[in-house]
Length: 152
Length: 152
DNA sequence: TCTGAAACCACCATGCA
DNA sequence: TGCATGGTGGTTTCAGA
Image (cartoon, rainbow over all chains, first blue to last red; front, side, top):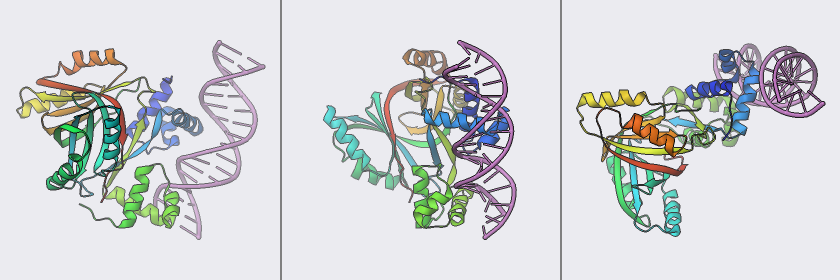
């Protein structure tokens, strides 16, 4: 865990709001010089607090209108079957996120498809063919809201 | 749905890999001039294919080591209860993502907390106090892998 | 190709242990 | 003194027309 002062927190809040802002723009808001702001941002990156920036794509405009969350319980789960499952899932391009979880299910997958029939294809030919897949729960995404979340 | 050519796809792939790359750097990789690359990126933004850039934070380094996914089924779900629920959830800072879904559950929440006992506080004082909450399913995040996903 | 702005570096000043 | 931080000024690189 890394200790950050209130200035770092303010900078993070600004960047969470809009990650494309320049150091000078943020500096103006916080009454800090551009290099001072820039050095803090750089330090946040070097210490790994900021891991990077991710593109926020509109998959619908790319023709992928369907997003489904799958909860997957493995039928057999020794160490090998986890590795096997993860290797298999890595080969499915429609899988956008793989979350290894503890609870009712073993994995949560975020799957994108062009439409429902395309999703059926992915489910039948890809997901269900993976080694060790037991129970599968599906939820179709209707809408999504991301919020900044706590930072300190 | 927006039609993109193969060059746009290559640019998107580069930006998905690393969204901080400059237009000139991507242009060098694709044998394109800096302005040509820049215009294409700009067009992708203006058409809304690229919605923006999101900071990728390491919440663990910020002292939030626990991430839990909650599946929530509403006990009563007329139009009012959906609105009530969404208003209530918006007031909980620990909730990072709100997904309205169709299937076994009505909502999926991504909740971050400092540790398990902090999560218990959020669950008892915040989540369970929301209006209309029925069944709740919890899964603790162990590890997560994000993949580029299909773009065309 | 061209211009203003941003990133980035070197160097010095200040405040505090 | 030593360390952490901020400021100034200058060069390189980029965004944007």
